[in-house]
Structure formats: structure tokens, C-alpha cells
Picture 1 (cartoon, rainbow, N blue to C red):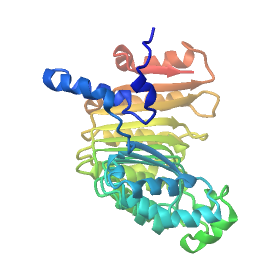
Picture 2 (cartoon, one colour):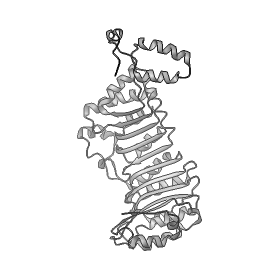
Picture 3 (cartoon, rainbow, N blue to C red):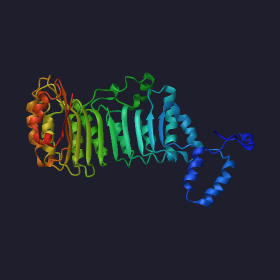
Length: 386
């Protein structure tokens, strides 16, 4: 049963030091008996007020920017504790967009210690790039589904603004399409504001390819590059090749992870004419690799693995989807894979996953694949999903 409060305690109703803070002090002084004794005598008279709150992980929406800015301006040291920042500026109104343009630069000027920046929903403009460029300590950048940018042009400017960047993750960025595809959910008022910054004509394949090559050049500076759910359409084949060639030529990149969507449309001829000479790249992860709906549409994978096998790559994580309902002799393709995968330089394969659609677990497809790769099967590296 809790003892009754003393008359002195009942008479005082002012703020007290939080129990958690008292416990931290006691824990810190637990082996200093003299200080701990003095502390215990003084604890009942402590009436200090907590005057600040520390933020380490901040999720910032459009409406919260002014209030967060007021907090930063009221406490000069508050921004120094923020390590992770997520920006989610989804479909702002015309007034909010104008206010955001004025406040964002001031907010970023207070955040000197942000190491991880996540952009879930953001319209990339020169003003936004300039504001985010104030985050000098960023080492990891995550770009989400709601990023609105002009092909690779603005992404390049955005990435270049972070001199210490070592990790980049991009999810669902349609490199082969122009801005109008991504602006369907944005109000016309915002479109009117942004129109001077973005071209709306049909994409030029050669122009996009040059932009992507320039974009990748600035990405491949760290040791690990992860591209998630990247939609490499037919017109973006050159960009995909540029990514692989740049990754192979990089002197710092050790790991490349690509989550592919619809990559079966990549041209085999493009790989045959490319020059993938790995310098520092040791690990390649390809996820959601699908066959094209036409015979021969997956031969680019064979060409890729054949080139990689002549280089210094030690580990491949390879997830391929097998759909026996398609008009494609997938087992002919699997037989072709046995050559590249048998190369000595690929003895470090870590995982070989198959996503089988149209058959049952342990059925004909699984049996034939296990028969094609007995060495991988014996090492327990084959996995099947249905």
C-alpha cells in the first residue's frame, strides 16, 4: 500500500523532475556513495521543470512544418539531436505549397546532424534541392513511391547535393517515363506552379539514356547501391545497361541490389555489346526476375551471368519467376543457365530462388530444376515459392 503523502508534499503542487530523470541520475551515481547520499537528501526538494524535448527520428508532413520550425527556432540545440528525417509532402494545397517553399529552407538550416533522409512524397524543384542540400551529414538517402521529378535530371541534382552519401535506396521510380505519368494525383494548381520547371513532351529515348548515365555516375560512389522496384521499361534498356556498366567500373561499389519489374523486356543484344569489367563489385542481387512473354525474352539473363562469370563477383542472389503457363520453354532457358552458373567465379552463389506459378510444391517444375542444378541443390541453395 502506498504511504500517505506528507503535508509538505500535499502543499506543493508545482512541477517536479520526472521519475525517469531521477532514475538516470541514481543509476549514474550508484557507485559513488557520497554523491548518492547527498542526492537522496535533496531529491524531495527538486522542483525543476523540463524545458526541452529531444527528437531523433522526425516524420514531417506539410502541415507540421511551421510548428516544427517554431520549435527549432525556440531551441538552438534541438536540431542537433535529429538523426533521421522523413518528408511526406503529399498533395499540398496551393497555400501550403507556397508556405512550404518559404519554411523548408529554414527548417533544414537547423538540422546539421541528419544521417538518414527518407523522401516518401515530394515534388523535386530547384528550391527543394537547395533546401535539402543544407543537410550536410546525410549518408543514406531513401526515395519513396511519391517522388515527383523530371526523369533523371532532378534526381541527379538531388543526389549530388549530398557529398557524404554512401547508401541509396530507390523504390518504384519509372525511369522510362516523363513527369506527366506521376502527376495524375496532383492538383492542377500545383501543375500550374511547376510547369516552368518541367517539360511535358513525349520522352526521347536517347535523351533519357544520357540523363540516366549521368544519374548513375553520381550514384555509384559508395559501397552499396540498392534499387527497389525499379520499372525498367523497353525504352530504358540503355539505362539499365549503363547502371550495370557503371557499377562494374566503380572503384568503391561492392554490392548492387536491383528489384526488377518487367525486366524481361531487356535486350539480349545490349548485353552482348556491353563491357562489364568488375573492379570492386563483389555481390549482385537480382530480385523478381521475370521471363518475357515471347520466346528468347529471358536470354539477357544468360548474357549477364556469362559476363559476370568472367569477373570478380563472388556472390549472386538470384530470384527468378517460372510461369509454365507462358509460351516459353523455360527449361531450355534453365539448361542454358547451367553453363554460366558452373563457372568457378560463381562458386560463391548464396541463393537461387524460384517463384513457380502453375505447379504444385514438389511437382514437375521443381523436380526438373533440381535435376539441372544438382550441385546447388546439394548445398541447399535452391528455394521454391508457390
